[in-house]
Amino acid sequence: MKKYIFIVGGVMSGIGKGVCSSSLGKILQSRGFEVTAVKIDPYINVDAGTMNPTEHGEVFVLNDGMECDQDMGNYERFLDRDLSRKNYMTTGSIYQAVINRERNLEYSGRCVEVIPHIPLEVLIRIDKVFAKNKTDIVIVEIGGTVGEYQNILFLETIRMLKIKKPKDVILALVSYLPLPNNENELKTKPTQYAVRTLNSTGLQPDIILARASTVLDKKRKQKIMFNCGLREEEVISVPDVESIYEAPLVLEKQKLSSLILKKLNLRARKTNLDDFKKMVKNIKNARKIVNIGIVGKYFNSGEFILADSYLSVIEAVKHASYYFKFKPKIDWLDCKEYETNPEKLKELLKYDGIIVPGGFGGRGINGKIKVIQYCRQKKIPFLGLCYGMQLAVIEFSRSVLGLKKANSTEIDSSTPYPVIDILPDQKINLAEKKYGGTMRLGAYNTMVKKSTIAYSAYKSFLISERHRHRYEINSLYVQKLEKKGMIFSGVSPDGLLMEIMELPKKIHPFFVGTQFHPEFKSRPLNPHPLFKEFIKRCADYKKQKVIASPIKIGVK
Ligand code: GLN
Image (cartoon, rainbow, N blue to C red; front, side):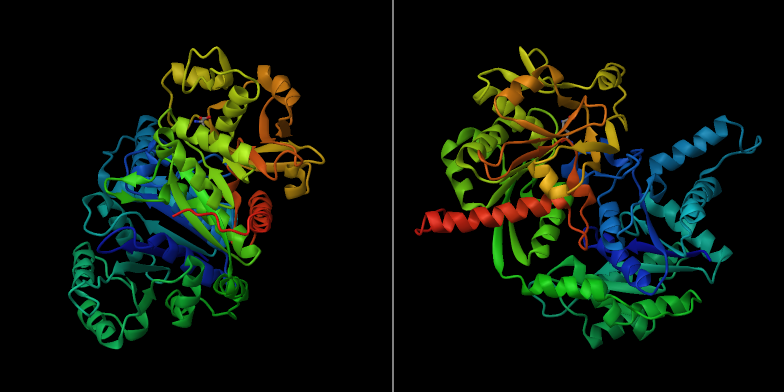
């Protein structure tokens, strides 16, 4: 059984197409089918690794080291499955494969053309996800929106497959219905245009998921039905919800899985979405607030603040908070502000925990280092992720080891104290200008030391986590750092790389950094142990803060 559900977007991007695709996957999975998801990005970039997060959002990393779109994170989180590089492709990677085939004479001297060879390559790739996984249904999300020149080849792919396998392919359009300020009704016209554009490529949507700030009423639904040629049950209302994990429940309330199974000629099995139902109930009932500050630099986009660059970190905080029935309140703190205004550091006291996530380059790092120093000195729970850990080691080296000019060679190549230095094989990559897909990427094992915070979180001596970096703690400084109290509670199995750093519990309630990105492995139904430990300590810290200071800390 090979069934395909294609998802395309209408009207505009950023309306939750990824969450809709993941939710669709979740409800079909809940009917007893093995579901996987594929994302196709219409970029020439061969993968997402070379894209700036402020432009493209988070670069999500899979176990096998694939650097991909943040939607892949949503699929993994909703479906609770590890995906592989087969589940992600870009225009660039498809062209690259076709050109390689041509060079290898695999087209036997024929003329290689955009149509049909590009769509055929896409189909070969999609079919690969069926081969090993014993998958029943694949959800294929096409990036961007219909009408964009760059996804036309993917629409052609759908058209070709629909002709070949009419009973096995359906197409869903996730469209947006605006509610303009001066109007009191959801407007359906942009969706009608989107469908007409789709029609001009030879495609008719089987289902429309009508995203809007509010519920789609009967009248507007009828307008879409009439003008877009769909039946009532094929127009699904997807209003804004408090938590994205509610979306599958919203879809299922409208009997979407049964409709899809009928369209795909699959025999319906019993629904069981109890796990998500329970989680959503917990989210709604969460009362106690835990205040988390995330200090980053990939927030500003023109005049707007976007937090997409840190999506998995945010989700991991949420998963762990929901686990304890806490309501997480997350603030985005721009690290640059701490560089110029030291008074601002005091505001950190209002948080129950601070996270310094991953990053690259020198911009804003002095602000991050100041924040880390403040957290260390004021005993505010701190979690450093990748760059966050490296900067914590720099701060410690400067303040505690007295190496004032300690730095990472990423920031200052001639620092006298390179406490963070480039990995030897990475040096070669950079010298040869091999930037794309060459970092230390994907899952690696870490040995966890007994009687550490890391061990109390993981409760295991051997863990596997996902990496994405070129630099690491310089082994020449490990003993010096240890002498002053830093603990390397996680190391690579060969003992050479320091993967987890922490300060002793008697010195600080929670000061932990990881060279890897634990956030990529957190799942809503299976929160990450380190984030759980962090949130637990944040809540303890909050409690103790209230006891220690009955007067509220005045921060506006
Ligand atoms: N820039 C650092 C490195 O390459 C950290 C990378 C990251 O935070 N993902 O090692």
